[in-house]
Image (tube, rainbow, N blue to C red):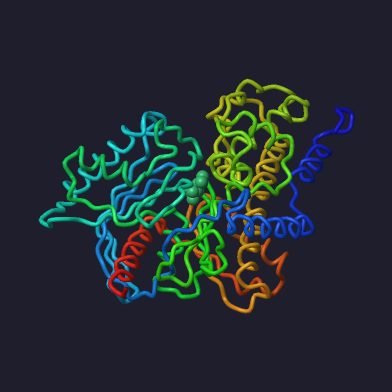
Length: 443
Ligand code: BGC
C-alpha cells in the first residue's frame, strides 16, 4: 500500500484484507493440514510433529490418586487428584503459582529444583504424608518426543522459555533427579503428558464423545485419538487400538504470513518456527497488534502521528490489553498515551478486533481440519475439550471460533461442541496415570 492511498478508513479496510481468512483460504489450509498430518504420522518431514503419547482414551472406570504437576506457559499448578472409577474426578488440593522469570531463563537444573521445592511446599501446606510412596503425573506443555509414557525428550522450548540444558534431555529423568536431590525420592513419576492430551483425557473420562483436546492460551496446540494402524512411525506393540496424538499444531507452516507476522517472527527467539502459534496464541496477539498500531502511527493515520515512543517496546502491549479494549475499556493511561480522539479509540478497537478475529478464525479452521480428518462427513458428534485463557476470557473469542466452524461446515457444525475444561490439562494427566496403571493390570 502506498502512503497516498490511505486515510484511516482506507487503512483499516486494507488491514482487514491483510488479516482475513476467507472460506476459500480455509479449504486450502485444511488440505495442507491433512497433508502435513499424513507426513507427520509417517515420520516424514512435516511442520506437524504428530507425537504419539503412548496412551489411549480412558474408559471412565480407571481409579487412583495422583499428585499432579502442571507446568504451563505462565503458571505452575500442583494438585492432588482422585478418580473414583465412575467417571468422577475429585481435586482435593491445589497450589498455583506464576512461574518466576528466573525459572524460565535460568538453568534446567534450577528449573527442576524449583519444581521439586514447590512439590515439597505443597505436601507441607496440604498436610500430605504417611504413605510410603506417591505417584506423580507430570503435565509438561512443550514439545516432547515421547519414548514411553514415562519418558520424553524436549525437542525445543516454545513460548518464552529458554532454561538451559533441557533441550535433548528426558524431562521425567530431570524431575526425578531433582526430587531425589530434595529428599523426595519416594515420589514416582508415573505419567508424562502434554497439556492438550491432559485436557482431552480429563473430559473423555466422563464423556465418550470427547475426541479432541485444544489449548488456546499462552501457546496453542491440539491432540486427538488416532488408530495405531494409521501411525506408520509408531512401532510400539502396546495394548491400545488408538493412541492420542499430540499434534503440536502451533508449528503448522501452511498459513500466509503478512508483513507484521514476518517481522514478529524474525525478531522472535525462535524465528521460522511455531508459525501458527505466533498468529494465534495469547503470547503473541498483543505484539502483533502493537506492530500494527505502530505502523498506523508512523503512517500518520493514528494519534496524528504522536505517541509513537509509548508503544515502541516489544511485547509491552499484551493480549490482556486487547481484551480490555474488546470490553470497551482501554490501555491508554498505563502507556501514558494522551490526546486520544474518538476516532483514534475506534481505530485501535478495530485494529485489535481484526487481530483477535484472525486468531479465532484460524483456530476454527484448524479444529475443522482435525475433526474432518477423523470423520470426513461429520457423521458423529464430537466434543472438543478446550482450556486456555484466550478461549476462556477474551470477549467474543469462543463465539468467533464457533462462527467459523459454521461458515465452513454449515449445519454439520452442530455436531461439534466446544467445551471449556478448566484446569483439564493437569487433571487429565492423573487420568493418564490411571489408564496406564489399569492397562498394566490387564496385560
Ligand atoms: C507447545 C505445546 C503446548 C502448547 C500449549 C506450545 O507452545 O509447543 O506443547 O501444548 O504450547 O500450551
